[in-house]
Amino acid sequence: DADVTQTPRNRITKTGKRIMLECSQTKGHDRMYWYRQDPGLGLRLIYYSFDVKDINKGEISDGYSVSRQAQAKFSLSLESAIPNQTALYFCATRVGGPNTGELFFGEGSRLTVL
Amino acid sequence: QKEVEQNSGPLSVPEGAIASLNCTYSDRVSQSFFWYRQYSGKSPELIMSIYSNGDKEDGRFTAQLNKASQYVSLLIRDSQPSDSATYLCAVSVPGSARQLTFGSGTQLTVLP
Image (cartoon, rainbow over all chains, first blue to last red):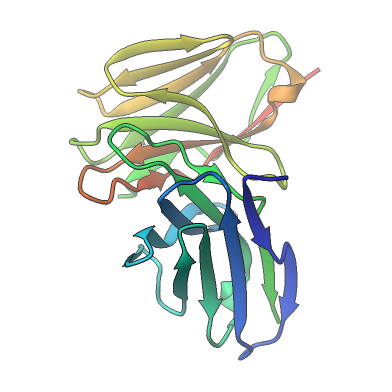
């Protein structure tokens, strides 16, 4: 089983619908992240969390919200999906501390908003 | 100016050749530098990290860092078709968050 699990892996939805992407991890890491990836734009940070009480906006948080239900679970919500939120979404985890930059990624959730 | 810039490619090299991937960054106080490999349809995986000026070698991979010129590169020796992937450069920005900023990636194709 994967250490970082994302559900659903693929989702097609319509404009205006609420969507939740879920992420769970068994690595025991405190830090969890949500990124989106678009062709030619690389990975862009949406939200990140250092523990269940510490949630921070990334560079593109507008239109998204998150919930850190437990150390191992971090969910991303689109309250009212729009077509330009069509993208590949990655959850990632990282151990804390300096010079420990390795991110461990989930397998990705491909979201299509029609 | 983007914080982390890479040539998008595609970069094509013949099998057995050296592939050279480059990355420049804008924040002079950046401290940690990483190369991730991403196969098509898959998630990124870390292949190299470098923290100080100079070269760091790991098997066929060599990361080179020059903080004065604000660039980091990845050399892949004896390139194999299995090296065909997109390579993402990532830079750690100092501060309490220490999150990574990614470049847009360079697509590498190794031709048999």
